[in-house]
Length: 144
Image (tube, rainbow, N blue to C red; front, side, top):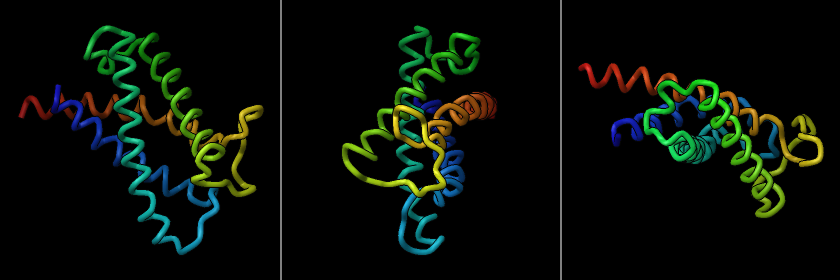
């Protein structure tokens, strides 16, 4: 199980980093592109922990540690519900509670919540890809 969690964390960081870099123009930042890209390493690590949290929610909800290998409809629903909820909470707290970042006018916004669509989509789209790739990687790793 430890190998799986380590693999999940590593894959999460690697998959989330390009997303973080791509969404940089939607946030108010000062500096050049290279500084922004370096800045994206820390959020990518945070995204890795978020994906681990989504995995743990699924483990509790599905009552099986291998739920993400064969998620089925309930597993995907769990991923989406947990990803949406966690993303909304973190984004709202970061923007309004802690004032850690602000959006540019280009950021599409979720109505009624006042938070960006793109970071929420990140936790809806990427976790299923991350879980699928991690499952494949761990199986391959175990055969080696």
